[in-house]
Image (cartoon, rainbow, N blue to C red; front, side, top):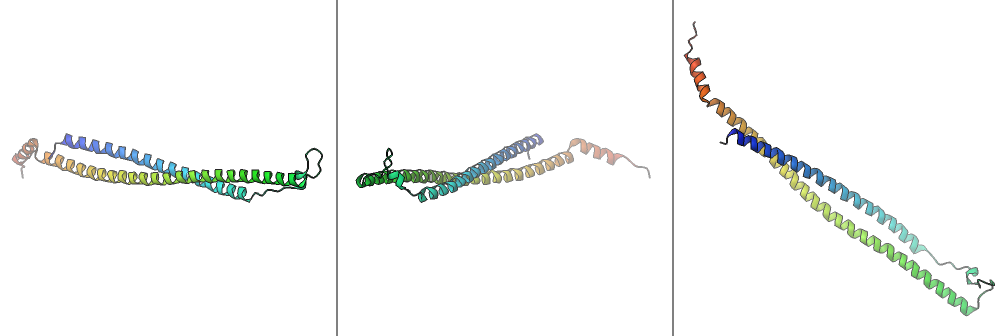
Length: 178
């Protein structure tokens, strides 16, 4: 059996290890909550992007007669010039609309990738958290066993102490008058 000071050192070390594991546990929980919060924000941003995409996709080019008139004299443009203007306006509108839809889609795709990374990170953090919890449980079991062994060692030392033996002999030697 170990001497008492070795048990006390082991108990101190186990208490330290448990405290360190608790810090890791708190840190892991905080990181998990932070990553979950980030994912929630990204999901909300993607919901907003879906709405933006629907609005952008629903936009239609509306040409009124005034937009096809001469800007100076306000008379109707000749048919060929009118057709060229309609084609140019339609082309510009469609390009602008497509660019906006592409921008929204790309942002959504990047957000999805970020959410997937966060999901992997949460899985890794949960695995780390499980390991930390297991370590805490093991250290606590070791601590209980070490305290028990310390108590048993102290009891054995008390029972086997030479001074105790002397006192027992002295007590036995005392004659009690009857």
